[in-house]
Length: 214
Image (cartoon, rainbow, N blue to C red):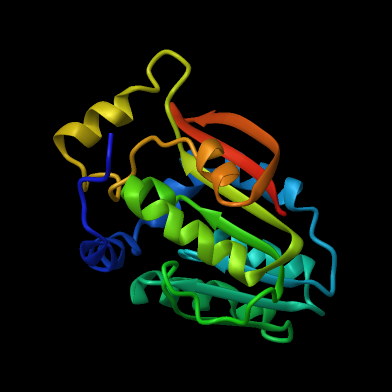
């Protein structure tokens, strides 16, 4: 299925969801998020960007692992960023910044980052718009830099298709997410895939991808 919700609607939807998103994030996304951070293999001193930082569930762990590096988190939802800022307060001595930002036009230097992390965003984006975002990801990553993606994907186990059914009927209920697969798009846009894993939690199907910018 292609996206049923326009990008212009996303900030308002996620501002509304920001108050309760952590509950969902911990119940349905923890397994995939933790595995993504393992694959990222973060070392202190890196330049790291998280696009669609949300409430900071992953970004908090990134900053803890990389206190001496640079950590940048962007999101299009002011409400989600406000929650992330509150979560990061205990790490005030670490080097990080959070700001409004757009995946279609990342206001960062070319070939600057060692690692780019992005979770549950491409499942909100229309297929025809994905290439432009991946081109931006490639632009800001150093050659050989790592890209970690987590997305809702097609379910493989009994019951996991319930989320696709809900999306067809009420696409805004789970924030506009629908199942996607990014492997082909990544290869078409200059990334080499090193790992692609399927994880399921609360019947919610996620893919975790580790890719390198070539």
